[in-house]
Image (cartoon, rainbow, N blue to C red; front, side):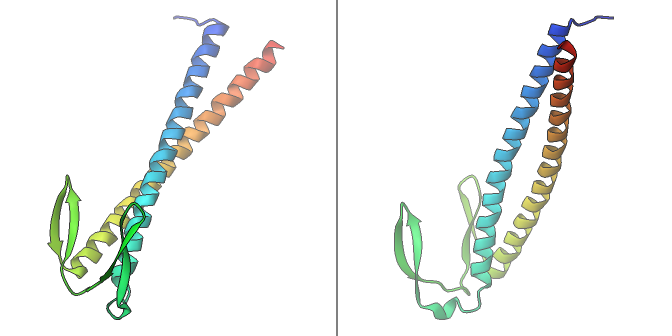
Length: 140
């Protein structure tokens, strides 16, 4: 059986702590990106479900770069939806609402899973920090 010196154990422990810290930070970034995506889908869904959308007259629609164009939204017309890799399809507003609801549900399930993984990593991180402090206390 191979025995590690105290110094080697400390190095291994500090590497594990760094690894877990990286996992936690990466997970936080992924959670943030997914949350923003879900917010975007929720915003689109709320616009589609707005009953007064047709009677609102001209609205300002962002075309990027802080530039807006006045337009009239006709919610009964087919919508153009991105389905990935620069591919778009036309679908009815009702189909789009269902698609958005499913996407939101999928993202929420993924967020729950990622939050659970983050919680496990954070718990392991705290345990390792505690072990490192105990080891430091024993040396003194």
